[in-house]
Length: 569
Image (tube, rainbow, N blue to C red; front, side):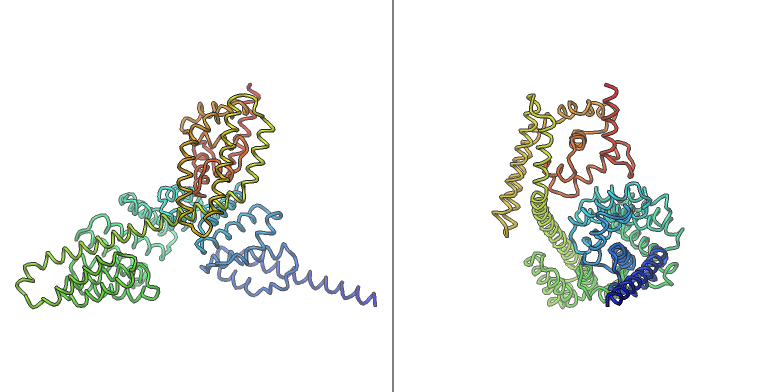
């Protein structure tokens, strides 16, 4: 009986090892195809029976490669259940590149969920593990994705900064991805009204895309170029140029077929050229293309169709399109929209008064177009204000969660510094008193979060007022920070001021926190940086001002210079 059990155990182990060996071979084969043939890599992984995976390392590798294959095939994951085994395993095992990839694809999942705060935190973790690896392509993708997140948050200057970092990494690699990042950069420049710079950036993108003959990218660049030209100069010449760009690109790269994404701008070109039938035809095609999800493009198309029909004196149809637009855009000012509709209805019912109509025709059209623009602008401003307020409210709630998680570690850090350096002189006593006050301030935010749980608007107002009061105190409270850091760390701040004149007061304060050993999250708490992206951006800009590359570590830089200054003294 004992021999039988032993035999079965050995047989099970041999079978298990054989299955793992086969699966690891398949994963290795999928990894080799990941960049050039991602669809084949996904096919291989999908045909692996995950129930036969017994080793944690193999399961982690399977989870990572499966997540990577799905992402590369344009399949958006919105649950972290697949990538989680990789995160858990590589946290304490494996190479840094594996850790970096695991955090990167977790960030992609958070991005798909719309959880921008956790997305940026995961990207930061991914970048930390990329330092010293050869994952340049992944690093460039990371910077580009962070740039996209900034754009979604209307932080356009920060977005341009991250796109440029992505381009610095992409240029030596000579991949078509450089063209896509250049196009994203141009879109952001256009939003900021930097039209000449945007067109120059798009021209660079076209050169890169032509090298790789990426027709999808070339069509997108043509569309962006046409849109930018129309935004620059609203005249007949611009409309002609934009239309030519679209037709030339479609003829050369898409067998003459106009993609659905280009139909709205082409319709607008025809409208500017007073070719109303063509304008309406292309607008209707675009509406059919986008009507399934009733997105914001449909909103603009209804307004465009109303203007086209009004220009053709077809007021009944214009009225119909504006009614549809009202139903779709319920966030706009209802009374203004109804007044506009009533004005069009009155025009329609009095159409028989031909002589009066001829005299007032141009005036009515101008008023209607102006009213439409005012409604769109006011609605857009109201939506942006509402979105910004909601983003700030979520930001403060996230800051309260950060305090809950890191408050204890911050207290321990204070105790450690006090034990090392004490409160022997007046400046030290003032500095530690300021840090004590900061702990009490953070505790106050925790109390507000508990008191107003479930009432986010009231919590937002209370925290906003509290942070304003604390902000007025902080300048005086931390005046001694530079002196204390110089005292403890061999005049490092004096050295930085002498050798890096571009550093401002905020940069030097961040240098002090790094020298004192505070983590980025602890630094956020001390300086009340409610925006999770701000500390990351400040560290990136500081690294640039110090002349450091992406692979250089800030903490190592300061440790090395403090050591050198010690020997000099």
